[in-house]
View 1: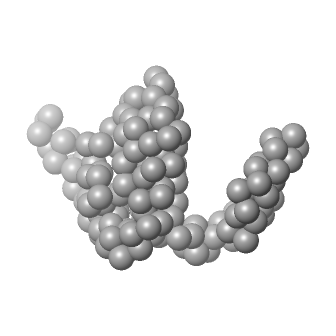
View 2: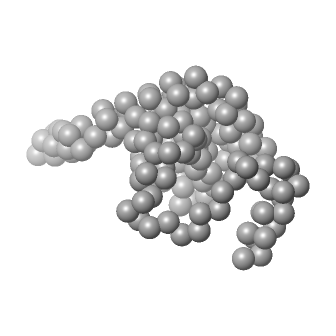
Length: 144
């Protein structure tokens, strides 16, 4: 509650009240539509041991919307996503860089749309269940 009060005060000071909306809890059934309606989706992961060894499911969900995605370069993320091609990558633990990348995305809507479409294309190919099943089967066949 205290954080929300401070955020609302900052939003007022920055005169961006018409650009920020607090929704409160969103029903799980409504969440996909909220994600789809977003102009940009951001996932700021810290550079820690949890983030170092994996690829967040949420990131796949964000990419699947076809919207531009801003995410920090941690763990396996840079192995799969290319900056300004399939997503917009920012430096971990660097709020100034995250803000810069977000501003870039907002200031370049055509580029952002193209990158969002490429992120969606990636989810429909390399991240698809068919592709992943084939990779698993090839791995199993190779180890027999």
